[in-house]
Length: 137
Image (cartoon, rainbow, N blue to C red):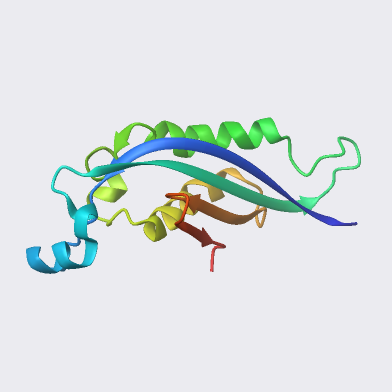
């Protein structure tokens, strides 16, 4: 049977402040620049989640894309959309919400709600020019 990869895309808006408690005020300003703005700054994120699996002979699908959308909405968008990540999302109160950290967190939020081994890739577009990818490695 063939392995097929299925991707669903959602968008959400969120603000954050890039700031590490392990760095001095000066180091944070130097490393993160305008992204270290004390009041934060925002992005229109695009999240792509790719699952993999064999096609179910009864349905002709790897997974019902509507079910994947609901999982993404419930476990990512409902938590992060129109939020200040550092202030409103528990994990980011102690984890710097860089795109790299965000995709690892998103993976951990989604994985328990999918079949074992089904989650293949999480891709987060922070801007048109910046994209991070995580495959659970």
